[in-house]
Amino acid sequence: MDFLWLVCVAVSVSAWYASAERHSVYWNSTNANFLWDDYTVEVRINDYLDIICPHYTRGEIPSQEAERYVLYMVELEDYANCKPQSFDQLRWECSRPFAPHAPEKFSEKFQRFTPFTLGKEFRQGESYYYISKPLHHHGQECLRLKVDVVGPHGSKNKKTMEKHEELEEKMAAGGVHNPSNRLPAGEHFSSVTLLLTIGSKFLFFFFFRKDVELFNFVNQGVRVTLHCEMYS
Image 1 (tube, rainbow, N blue to C red):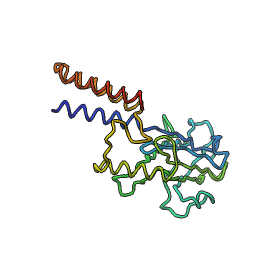
Image 2: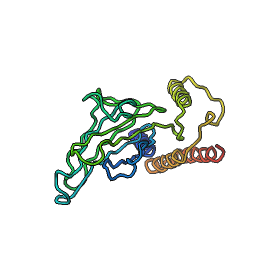
Image 3: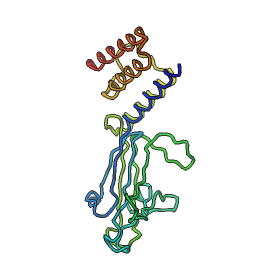
Image 4: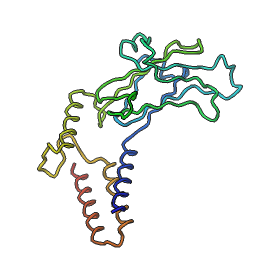
């Protein structure tokens, strides 16, 4: 039973890593993306946004010329004016341009729920805004970024996202009955699902290799998954 629990945990962790992506933004005035006012990054729920602060080797430039920024997460109006309204909007501070070994990096996880009181929560179909103010008093006065939280297939249609979330909630509560062997319209088996299924087969075989009957059962399940993948 302990082996089975371990397999479930391994598959769950694999699914989590497979579904999340990281999006890096180099927050400095030499990033050409900041030359346009509509610098936008698209993320999905559970993705990460990595803010890479300016970084220099010691002695590369005088300390007073090194770029340093305070970053804020703001509302649309503040984003348009490039002006934060309160200290509560402060998100990060890029204040160590000569940090040893590697640049400072701050990460935002775009999750629907957070266990932390001061954590941020995000929703599909919404946009979020980041701006910065320089501490070095030179270069471009304002750098800003728009982040769109899109759906699983890149759709940002709000009604579509609300229907998708409603369906997920009903399925989690056991309120959706689908008599067909196919998934509901608009859904399909992804390659990630297929890989995870095959991975679970391997783990089952590794821990229960003496149990031929169980292995055959899992093997049959993979063939069914492959069949669904072909016809979805």
